Amino acid sequence: MFRFGNDPKDQRRNEIMNFIFGLDQTISIWIKQNLHNQKLSWILSRVNRGEMFALVLLPLMILSPIYKPVYISLPIVLAFTYFTDRLVLILKKYFARKRPLVSVMGKVDSNPDMKHSFPSAHSANSIVVATILVFAFGETPYFFLFSLFAGVGRLLTLHHYVSDILGGWFIGFFVGILGLGFYHSLLLFLT
Image (tube, rainbow, N blue to C red; front, side):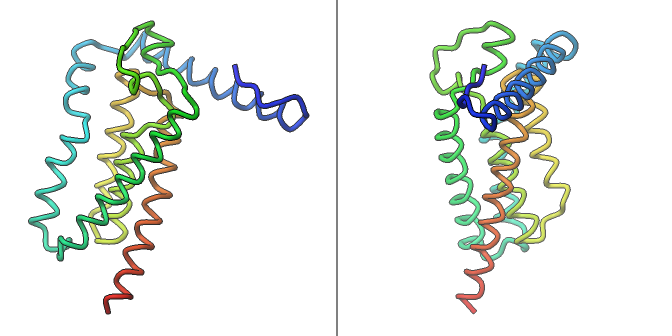
C-alpha cells in the first residue's frame, strides 16, 4: 500500500494512509453493491461536468447585479478556477492513485487523465467558485450545494473515493480563500 519510510513517524503515516485507503475501498465497494446504477451513472456523467456548471454560472454572473462589474468578477473566478485545476492536475500526477472505476470495478480506460483520482478536480473547482462567489460577491450560501452535488455525483459514478472528494474540497476552499484575499486587495487598490 503506502510506504513513506522506516522511522516511527513514517510508520505512523503509513498506518494512517493505509487506514484511509481501506476505508475508501470499503465505501466504494458498498456504493458499487448498493447505489451504483448504470442509468444514473450515465446521467450524472452528462450533467456533472464543468461545461454544465458554466452554463449556469456564466448567465448568472452576466445578468445578476451582484457581480457587477463582470470584467472584475468573471476573470477572478476564471483565474482561480484555472489555477485550482492546474494544481489538482499536478497532484493527480504526483499521487497517481487509481480511480475506483479501475480498482473496484476493474474497468480499463485508455484516457491517461482518467486513471488518477486524488484529489477530485470537480470538487476542487466547484468549491473554489462557490467560495469566491459566496464570500466575495454575496451569493447565497446555497450555491455550495453545486459543490456537494459535484462530489456526491463523482462518488456515485465511482470516479472518486471519499478522500478524493474531501481533498478536492479542502484544496478548492483554500484556493477560494486566496481568491477572496486577492479580490479584497484589488478593491483596496482600485479605491
